[in-house]
Image (tube, rainbow, N blue to C red):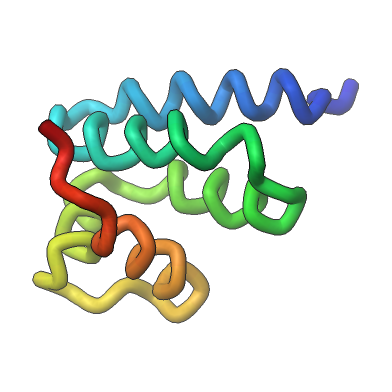
Length: 86
């Protein structure tokens, strides 16, 4: 059975907000709140793949402590450019 786009967005939204570290919950969850509903299929694929990454690595990429892999670099740059969550 294939996942509908609506179900996929709901799954990804939950995954973005329940990361395991509060910092990544706020970064990815806030991004999902703002952008997930408008993402096209390619953007959903990329964000879904990003959500499968380790929180520690993600945090290092977003904060510029380590370079993100090329496939994720544009998305990570977009995440890093967002205002800090309050």
